[in-house]
Image 1 (cartoon, helix red, strand yellow):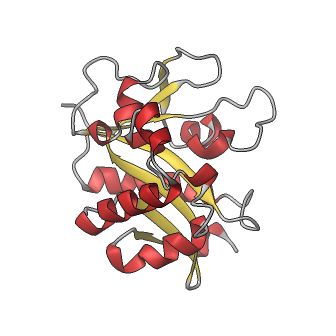
Image 2 (cartoon, one colour):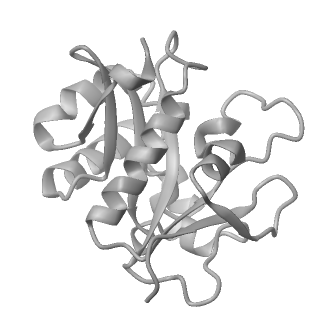
Length: 195
């Protein structure tokens, strides 16, 4: 599948089953996260069963607006990117590596917090396609900036580390490092317009 032929759609309630198929009904993406990892504090996330996480995220999708984007190869979802205003991501707001800087903490600052690419479709540029579409969505929604706390690939990533994306993906889109509180996780920002 060529990234230029990939269709991107917001995760709306009518596309929930496509996300379940992508994540795996039992697996729930990485370690049963159901994309609640960046939204909750660690203790709250750990206290939930996989089923409770799935149901919790389903509720977010049902209430709207869409919490992210799905990439499709034909009718099959092959990639996911979470993107919403920064304050919706409690862990992202409070974690040492990703906490806000310079007054960039309001609803007009969006965050790209995770990616999930279907096995067999990885290493084909889908993360870049999804990241660019996420920036476009944030811009169309009036965001002042978009941030990510990506992994700096100074050594090969171990399983599960890459869900936050890799710094070269964001650098190519014009993101710049604004803080580095963790050796491998710089906070990166793309300013879309001045406040």
